[in-house]
Image (cartoon, rainbow, N blue to C red; front, side, top):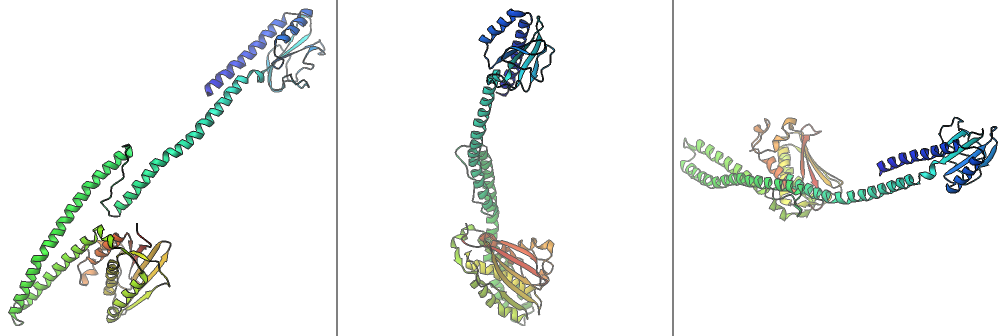
Length: 430
């Protein structure tokens, strides 16, 4: 349409000038009454709104025609000129806008002015321009509406894929990306990812099964071994030279059994089916119970244990026993690593949809480069080797936190030691 408008506009412009040039050549060879009759005859056949003429004497006094005054910008050189403002006249039929005009001197010495209105001949180009504008409007507006409607479906699918991917990242490997009946590019990609997830889940279950089976199968012979060592120790008596060696063997056996119990406990917590037992619980009551339970232990170690709670706390959705176990591990570690005369502080606060439970101590703290490693199984820092333990306590806490969909932050405390913050989502878990 744009090319059509350009071509037609140029063609009509040439046609207008050619028509005016023909009239100029025709009337230039006439004079006297012949010219007057020819002008009157041409005016009868021409559309007045398209063409006009004016006949003037040698002093430019009007003699005939619709034009009674020479156009201001028209040169008297016999050449066609394009005028932006054609005529100033009261006759509504005379062209006023842009026009092509020519002034020529005929044989009898008179001046003839011919005018051809451009605007009237360009009706076709205006029709094409209007059609172009309407076409653009009827293309762009429905196009934008169609684009908005068509993009909603892919965005909806992408949001569904994103929600499922977030659940997979959170540790639920049983989830799969949704597929649609269309089998388009998104479905092809989702199918590839689902196949990869199937393989990863199968390998994870195989590795987990091997570890669980080892821990479970060794627990029975270790129990028998400890029982036999204990009987031998009882039979040997306290004066036997083997008594001390037997005590050490029994202690090492207990250590191995405790580690296997810890591994099995973590494996149990990583089973997502444990979420079926989640209930709504009051965190305020849980924290008060935790404080009362560990207060005697802190007093025995000459440690100040304080609890700071607001008047109200939002309810949590989770397993009360597991949360008590996680907080007990954190609080027990804080008391264990805090020297006599130090202090341990528990604080709870809520904002928006998150409950924050912070445990701080004045102990040696956790170095910044070890704050992620302490959550791994069997990891023990240099300070941790000075105290009894297996390096599984914080791993159990991490498994409980992951099961509930919470977050655990490890940092430095204002008291000089470690600060562990449990970020809990309030309300019913999705």
